[in-house]
Figure (cartoon, each protein chain N blue to C red):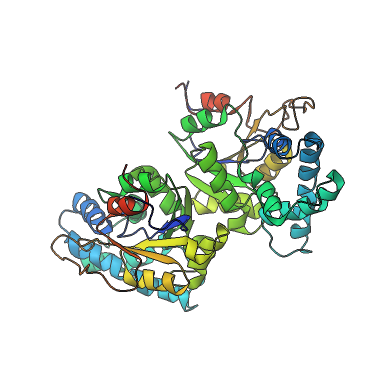
Length: 237
Length: 237
């Protein structure tokens, strides 16, 4: 198969939900550490705090604050609801680092390995640099470069993040493709002139809670997973 | 051999001269493109403009300007001295990108591969993120993370760069080791509390112009090359 987007030189990836399975990973960690807790509800509640916490930074209510710190603030608020208010400081720190240990979806490593043959592949996540680096090392994610909201001091969907990624590589926005399992992320990237690829992750919120992954107009590509994306962009191999 | 620095979790590397051979690489590119030019003198003159150009940024005379742009300003100034003022815009751009294509010293890839087994390895260079990423991809340098002056918007030896690297990984400065072939870089890192390893690169300025690489007090380690550093830090393998 020929390369469908020869002008695209840089692929940037959303991470939580797109490349790694945050729900399944958090559930497994919580189940192992605290078997009495409803781990599914815990994972969902933790993630539910994510957008509101970033909104406090976007609005200026909080100064620049990294995801590690935001995850920790949300966690501290959650623990009493789940009967875990007794957790010590080292236990809280360990649990908060579960986000550094998220497991990739089964296709992620193989897909990225193929995609990086012809193009540069980079994270473009609201996760902080240290979190993304630890995750890549643990999961074997073969990034050429770790880009993060932390580099641009702005959270997606702020245009500074998408345009900043193009600028780092001296590319026009149309030479960059954003890959994500979230339509809002892709819509914001598209508004900046980036190409977009939607990745189906029907079980992002757990196998029992299937997400609508039907195609929407506007995206350049719609793929079942990262191996399917490699089939389109990288040819067979 | 046991690990001599068990507390050190992150190794950060100077790049130009320490991991890659800028002089030899620039000489080869200039010789191939413009055989009539004194490539050795050209390479030295280009690099000589480097510190003064960064100084214009450090002093505030220039706003934040990346190394790609500084290299280009120096290049444009140099070309008439070498009879190359006729170079077209695409030719200038291609030549300026020679810094994205610098070749590693023969030990660099093997040393880094061993060093990354037990620790996180990252660039900590005044080179910009795109330059360092292109170089890593071309040369096979297996960084876990690309850190650059561009992330911190300050040039080494500004403390913001060294302390910024520790902060990105939530480490104390003493848990970070700076690896460089330049004593000034190491002295500035040491002043911030980092550990330091000096790497001998006697031919940084060309085989005909051997550099004094004798040990100086203050550095935690003094190594012939990155494989020797791996022998100390990573054990045999």
